[in-house]
Length: 181
Length: 204
Image (tube, helix red, strand yellow):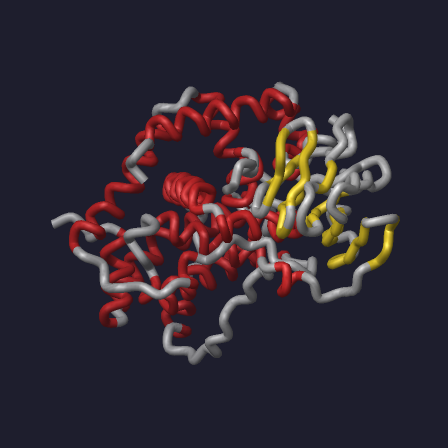
């Protein structure tokens, strides 16, 4: 038996507060959430704390996880992203996007769970099909906090080229994922 | 009908949590009315999930799991998260200032750390939108009424990005006052490169 995927782990947590499922999810995602937060410029202590907080939020909001809307990884990503924004917020207005956990939800059917499990795989395949330089700008967009001058230096290309690569990457991804998501 | 959507760079910045807060406040108005862009954003968040799952893990402290497990039964006060105001009524909580004939401004926020400010701008039908100094609006979403310029007509929930003050003359359309929510960025310092991408006029 292979281990259940993260979607099923979250649904087990939602259904009966399954601590074994939580532990498995924690082992899989907490170190990656910490990696994400570190790349976004948090120091080791903050990244550690927020990573634990993110998984704690997964536990608390598991009942609101909707596999019809998001894969488990995407859901956890938005939770970590929003925790980071909340932690960094100084302005009067929140910049966080609408939380997928903000909406009510009916019990997911088996095919919806399957679709969520495949969703991540399809997006992964589409990303892997991108030319390396396009994948690089997408990855930097999600994970890099450096000022633009550094980006130009790191990639050795002007900002306008970064922008056109992002646009190319997006239109290609759209084609690859059309009708899929 | 929505005709003008945010750019890819703006949506990516939003998905990545990198859009300056006040620009995100403007985008929120558009998203509330645009299922297409909400779908795009979901797709981008899926991409974020895949990239997250592929990141090389950074080990947590040895007691991290135990500490988190110990907190699972903590009671939490279920305060609902603050939701960004998206309707004119919810946004227009300040007072209008007269800027000129047919033009009023309601400041909603001082300049933040990124040098961005947020305002409501109200222009009477047939009046031209004023430029603000040398920068002009960076991102605007129309809440009521409409305006037209060389690039087309903008009406409710349309997004206009970039420097409106460069070489076009937006004029409020006949009918109701044209009211826009506008995030304007006046300086560059402290911006990440992605934030720069969504502010095309910042001296590139």
